[in-house]
Image (cartoon, rainbow, N blue to C red; front, side, top):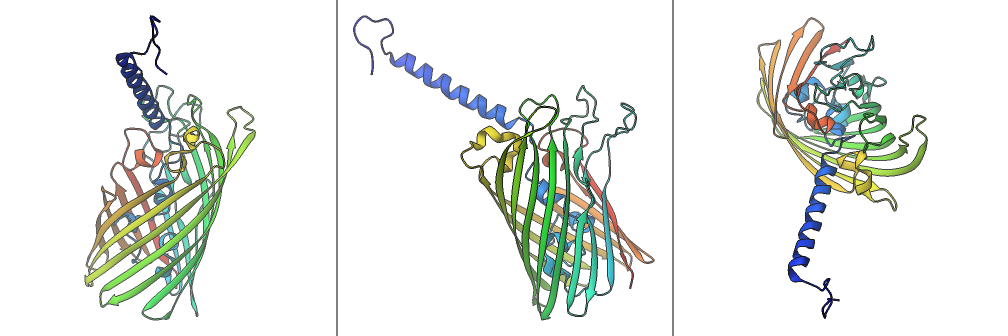
Length: 370
């Protein structure tokens, strides 16, 4: 209630306006500080580290493109493979080698996806995976002065996928995959807001691929991942003090047009919904988990690309990964195809902060044994 009489603290419209303005300014400042806190797990990480060089060069559009990396994107696209095929991908490292601490490295990114595809009489089986620790990054060896522009933190992860696809109902193909992930995050020592955590995930992915017209393919997949989080204390012994849950729902839908045998045009739309299951916890107080898990959130990605085959041995690729230009190429050698891809300014988006050394490069190969 406003005060009356001669009390010097009586209500004044001007004072009330100034108080409201100060409160609003404080709230905005808090949001700014929250948004600039180190992001432990950025939105791009879920989708990017599962890509191989070929679809990455095409902007990530892979819902209707048959490739060994389909085990990560749409298992239905694996149907029709025969024999035994091996895929390997590795992320190039761009930071110069460190002499501090002896054997420490300045790794930029580990996004090393592998796949083994086996043709069976009744369908196709594929096993996709990353080796232990080969899904993430480790910047703890960076200089103390921050000259490389990234937080000195570590994201360590691994995953495995078992998929099966069949084309018994031509021209419709179907596929199903079981995905398992484990990841760990260690914030930079100088980050007072970061939270160390462990994350265990398991989920099911289903997909279809159909030839709707000669030279025109349609693909669609749906992934549901359930995650169990263990938050760790900031002490050296890292004792657990809380557990949380979250869910990722991802729907990928796209087209691949082959107007002539030497050209492929592809387009994907990826819709993701992140559901935070933090019980009574306030998501705003858990921003150390990263932007996508600090509360419920939806997101849509637009992926576009093309592949141009020159002769029998060279392919050139160009694309747009949600607005970020991508380029790629491949060279067919006896018994092996070598692939390369680059995405412009992707690394800061994966890490959630940082500057410099921003482009991401992936190279790999595919080999067919029989």
